[in-house]
Image 1 (spheres, rainbow, N blue to C red):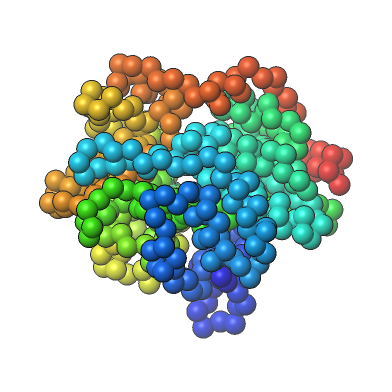
Image 2 (cartoon, rainbow, N blue to C red; image 1 turned 90 degrees about the vertical axis):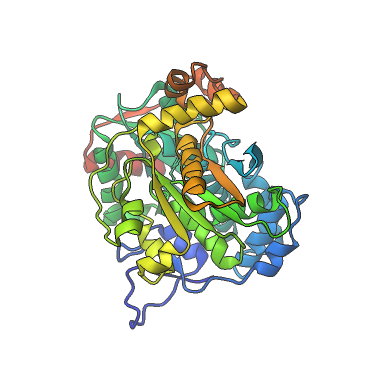
Length: 440
Ligand SMILES: *Cc1c(COP(=O)(O)O)cnc(C)c1O
């Protein structure tokens, strides 16, 4: 596969980049996002998977189909095995609705899949080139934890996490600060915006770029996005259905990376009938699908806070798939918006009726699936992505369902560990001194 920026001039001579280049660059130099020039045709391979195919095997064969020109077969096997020591699971909720549970990884949310693949593939590339990299990550809490865990003890890679002191939950802070080894945390005396600004300034600083091989690992990185397509294919293969019964996939969405990955799987040949884009009141994409007008704005706070996004970064990628035409997107994606009160009611109702506890993000997806089914009369199977474990949102879930979920053991473990971090003033000079002293 080869990639170009979403902002590249179609008539221009911009040369495409390899997967390896895209992974280490992250954001394209012109500020756009890397997208495939051409999508591979994989319907034969997808059709060869059965209900028995393991997730690791499926991931290995898809990785080979996508990147065989950049990784040899042994490297591909190592990436798939090292990255996916955890698996998705399909759980039926009612006759036409199933969950694709994506929270069995080390931080109990779907972002573990992308982060883990990215870490393994970067390690593989760096070992092969005998190079080292320093990953700088600014986090407001959750995504940093997934990245930290994924890169922990990866060879030839150091990770430095910048987080705003006093502004993340205790559980999040423990996940960021207790790993040790190649993962270090900086407590920035400032806001999340300060952390993000510092990281950006560091990437642009000539002296630092000369002395260190700096990389990012944020959610727009293709090394995180593309492997997310794997679990759509896996979920589709595992779903019980009668032959020919159509399948829709419902995706609780914020930055729309997850949905974009699903749309890529569809372009590769996954025979799904379409997608439901489920959002909370931060509904710029459902609004675009209804009106044809894209109106980014400030986000509003909700109980499904990982989806509180007012200007979804992956919308550029979706637009590119559909040639910028709303009619084409409407033919494949339906938007549904859900309010917090409805989310709470759904958590309670699903727990009463099935005994299953949903986290608030997944609950948005489940209610959106019901809504879509009622409005359209769709009578096939809907697969709703369960994006996080309910135990990550103890208070919200307890308030809604009247039952306190279990904190997953992997998270429990982090609470007992020794915190290690360094405090930092939110100034580039302070960060530079630390980086050059510690890593150069
Ligand atoms: C990040 C996240 C989402 C939103 O995913 P996008 O790819 O940003 O659309 C949904 N649910 C949970 C639990 C998340 O952490």
